[in-house]
Image 1 (cartoon, one colour):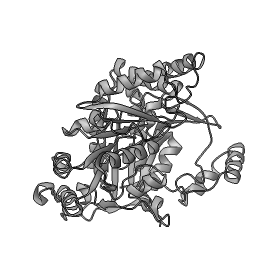
Image 2: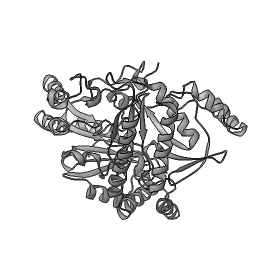
Image 3: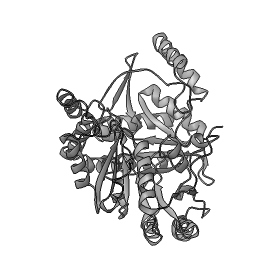
Image 4: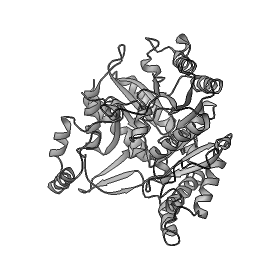
Length: 449
């Protein structure tokens, strides 16, 4: 059984049943895809063939529509957002590309906007074509700033698929047999209250934040760690740390001269009800990486936002990517932020997210296969178990629920093999949100007592 912590591997026996239900033109396209793309876990074989996307809906080549509660976390403002597409078209007709050596007003405006939004001393920016590259820039800047090369990160974390990113990441599906990886990449267990490694019943008050104290222990013993890099909340199975965790880690970093880097690639820009997820925890990192939704769900784009006093490498090339100040991507990002602000999507995410979580709590009361409901803003999900007392994961049930929901028109992610991760657009209508939860409820009714 492969490690499925980042997502489903598409190798389930139910995939064959799903495939047989597709029409012949769809299967022909899937066969053509299979013939020309390198095969890899998590994306091969493909599930379906799409021909359209709009708002919260995907449309396949058969004309079937699916509410997309997956979206690879890029669709904060919905697919094909009119404001974003309009900004892209307008920018293409004037300045479609900016050669490195030059700058452009659109890129400058975006950088100014990001440092205006970021709290504290986060006042300097670099752009990159994708968040994995921004993670790499953050690691390099940490080395310059501290004179150290070691990092501390979490097992089960994901920071991108490049060699440096999987070195600090903690998922075996990316790391296995890929060595040697970067030296000095230390790891600690993640804060995971539901299946706590430090307390057998997950009582955080009883264990006195051993997970956070373990971070400090490593920082003290190593003595020369450049940076702690982590997701403030784990996006795929929505693991929120216990109260006080990040405050303790922030204090430990400051004591040991270690930088704190938050990777918010998937959870930034309002997904949690705050523009930056770390704002929920009363801490400010030294750097934060944002991406995915920054390009409006259309253009791959990311940013590294760093403290002003980390502007220390004028003689180095931390990134210098060809599309670093891509004016079209910057226009998409500005339009995305404008949509979030003008449509008050932060407040909306909190309101609709609470409504969804209340519905899921009701499901948990009815179905004993739901071990825990987790959520923050419009990012929520269900941990499926065979037994609530032992908290034994139930990947078979998760698989059945996913394919039943797909048949009924709802798409979402299965993380770690047994966690149903639902991340709708922040623009989703209340009716569509209710319809999606109805489909989920119907699917549980069909498969569980």
